[in-house]
Image 1 (tube, rainbow, N blue to C red):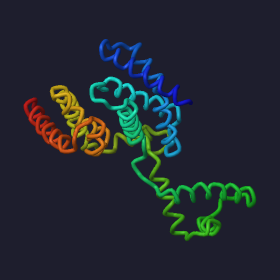
Image 2: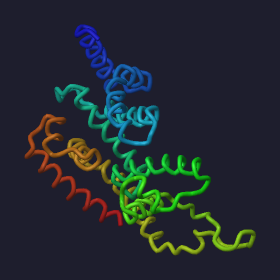
Image 3: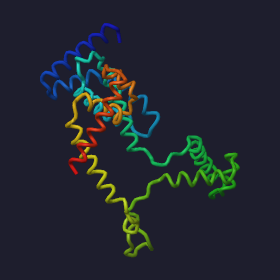
Image 4: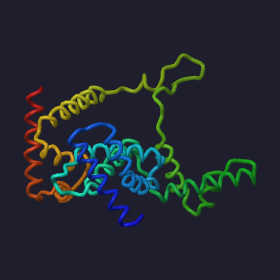
Length: 257
């Protein structure tokens, strides 16, 4: 894309952003989204090879971050929209991947060995018409039996088990796994959800600058230096706003109890 065309797109994007700030509506917002889809595609390309999620899913999630950036962008700050929007897009994708990610991390080398083992097992079954033993698999992979068994156990524990899984003899009116597993965390989960709602309600009452600082630092995982650059303020100001915001949030949430 030529430099002139890129400049024209940026100019048109800024014009639409200004119009959106003066009179917010879905049509203007969607036009800005379409003009800046390249920012989302760039982030999606970066993350698609590092996760199991599809490219289209990452695009959709990234667009949510782009919309949040459009709604919060302030032309008076003198910041380029692309620089402002990228952390929102990246943060939205990262939060999505964290929520979708497996709670048990397995070294990549182990995953590669497991995939290699699957191929070797298929070849062994086709040649010998039986399942290979752990010793035979380990020898084929040139690793110890103990390491192979450890890899198997790690991959097995990585798989989630449904709480609806029946427990007991097949055909009997046995209970499900969920019926037998106590859940002492249930009330804690309820309280955490209630705290989250109170936190969202309290954020609304903060000054806009303080709220923006807290969202960049705590919701989008930016450093205080990166936050200062995005908002066009000093690192010292960011630090003060964080302390001020946390103190105000604590006071607001305690008042609501």
